[in-house]
Image (cartoon, rainbow, N blue to C red; front, side):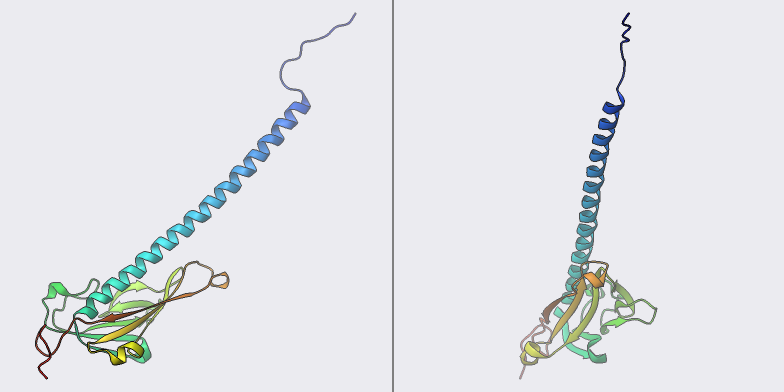
Length: 189
């Protein structure tokens, strides 16, 4: 007599093949997730960097646009902007509300963290990823300018690990709208 039993379920071979296929799918999914997470982190870092660069540029350009005089001190680590008479509401973002006093932009590392300050108020932390250094000078194009002018040099790193990252440099010139001795008028001489 031949007794055959009906089998239900999977055989051992079928179970091993399905586990192997599941493992392949799992490895592929984990790899794709890691790649997407890395891209998301990189995108977030670049967005933060762009926001920092834009904020520094806009804040400084507003201050310099209102400058009667510009002085670079501390070997390029500080910029003093003497504005023409302005209401306190015209003070650049991040600076103390001091309508007619000078605004001093400086790189400060006295608190153990390097930062860009304006009149003693921290504007931006200089670290990686992000803006790593700020320098000011009035040479080059600014030496022949008819209005107060400054060249700002920003070094920035788009990634956390400086060993595998190229620090990039952004230079731009900012110029005052100041037209002369009388407020907003032409120079009398």
